[in-house]
Image (tube, rainbow, N blue to C red; front, side, top):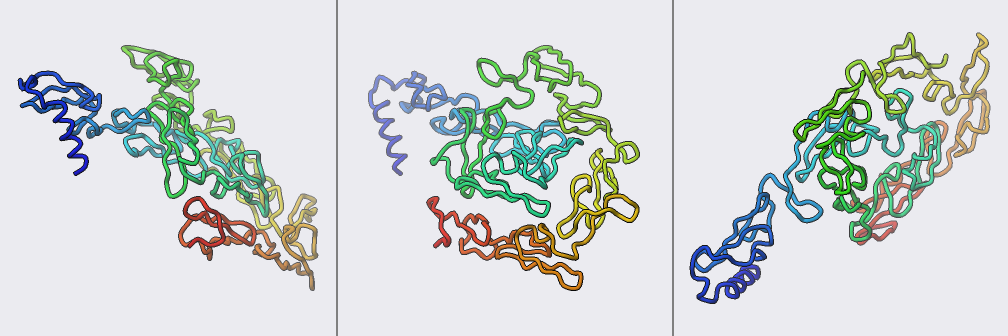
Length: 399
């Protein structure tokens, strides 16, 4: 009702004089939210909205258009072949193309390894088993235990690897000038303008080029138009890529059949266990996504099965080679430094410290399972947890 009265008041101001009684006379375009042409119809202003706008005063985005970060209405995006590369599925959210990445991958087009994962020599993104600089998203303290890493996150981060920002856009907008900050259940993410990508919308999306005017569609060939692995030609404002051997896609962004990503993100020929077996004597080789991987024998661990699993130790085998033998007496690392070891009759047993479990105390117990957060965000600590309550308050219990 208040909006109707306001609009009525504006009509009185605009139309109260008889000099505007003739149909078709122009009136201020500001009456159409500056997104349409205003003319009088029977002494009332009427708006002919510009493309992409709708509503009585052109204040809404028309169907097939969405609101950009500069508050303009731009055409909805559509998924195109290869938009998310070989490691993601394309979907449209709020009119914008978004890539849902497969496990281990992240980035606007799923070309990067997410926090807690690292690039292997075969090009896949593999779970971190030891602490690496990127394990906790460069924001948390990393510790490793029993072939897994654990992150102690700062107050403004959460997630297993500190990859999610806690808070609200009002508390601190992480997005660049080309992204819109969105709050989702206490977590923050950036929705990018068309042509932009990256976690904070600071880079150009594939097929777009960085110019003085920003990221624009590649009407002209640039070094990155074909992802640096193809030859670009331009005709009539459209670009076309002739990809190098091993690459395919509209911008040469994917590996073709028979090729896979290497650790430096090149497309290399698929491997086989006969010529590319990297496994030690403690593992057997198999092929996964074009790359060879190792399945470890009992007692062995690591990418190449050259390490010993918790509760096992290295020794010389009967054949003179390396072997991993079960601990029968207490060793310094038998209980992963998280418990007290005792041995009896050739059996080593661990009494775990509070907060840890497993035969060798290798598991940090999830204290969020029975938390008192009452549905709010819970952050697991060692033998404790903290709740992110309403209003951004941290406490042991949320009301």
